[in-house]
Image (cartoon, rainbow, N blue to C red; front, side):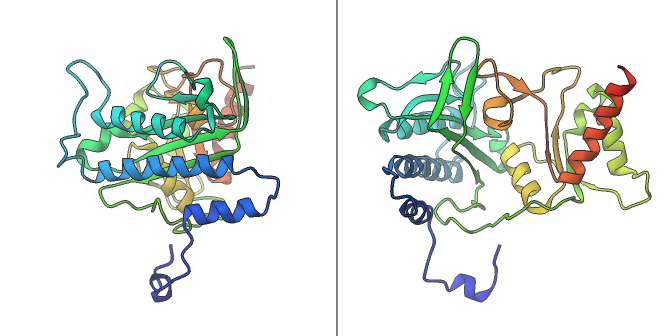
Length: 296
């Protein structure tokens, strides 16, 4: 992030809308549907940002109903995104982490884009003011049947919210990631689940704390909101882990929103995930490969 005096005195501001329109102008064949879709996603993000910032004052903290495990903000955020995406006229199928089934847009409002989203990731932390976020993937082509979901991703976005929002939703270029560092000094995992890990995950984390080669140990940083943890990992490098364990042998994070390279068989299928710098990922891959070879 640019903290120089010149950065705060810029008058030629690059907003998300301006960036999208600039890119659209490079493709004369573009009809503008994708720009409209992205603009409606931004509208949803702006609204959710607003209610997150005033959640306590607006009495939006807590559960939605007596026995419902959904948070009030989960329900509200989901409704906002569903209505914003349908009103764009550019979507045909919506899949939300908050809905058991896919939403098929009625023919009169139907477009060609499939959008899958988690409207408020990390909402279990909202009561104590921890950063939360939105994850959105959109595709102009895809297929769905009773056995398999395939979404060929055209774009993916995440938006981080806090009581003072860090990743600005209106200005496009507050952060420029470029390329994630090849290795990092941070590992991010919920060590409260350590007793349930498999031996290679446990071995990797032990080596993060007590490196075999005598190098400095990695620092543990774990927020418990994936958008916030991933945002930090992209900026500083390192590794984010949500491994499978004895309690959740198939992992806990949903494939459609958080594991893009996998093809799920159902819309809420779950998977373990390891994400981060190349060298850190290669190290844990080697541990898993060695374990498989030993048991072959």
